[in-house]
Amino acid sequence: MTVLNIYHQPVTLLQKLIQFDTTNPPGNEAACILFIKQLLDDAGIETSLPARTPERPNLVARQRGQGNAPPLMLYGHVDVVTTANQNWQHRQRC
Image (cartoon, rainbow, N blue to C red; front, side):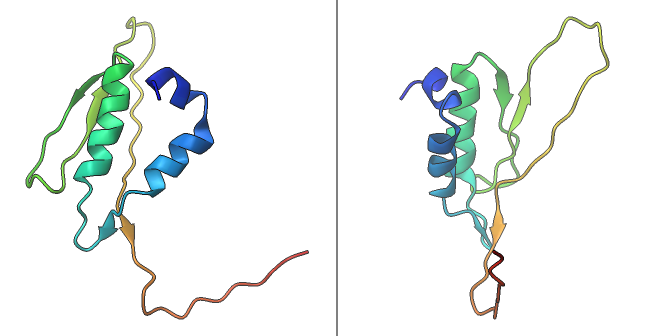
């Protein structure tokens, strides 16, 4: 699937993203980060991967503007916390 197709199919993109096991601890976000980096690279967006450890890289992406507006920064994370051994309950609403 090309990068342009996946951007037009958000359900497919979400399905691919939730297949990565980024449970923290230990983290192991590298595969997910590399997948997202490839999407951005294919779209022509400048990326870099600063990291303390190879298993937990950061992804920095920059889309340069024309300088007519203040910069905008978006921040997110891909690691998740397990719910194993937790007693969760939910109510179904009608």
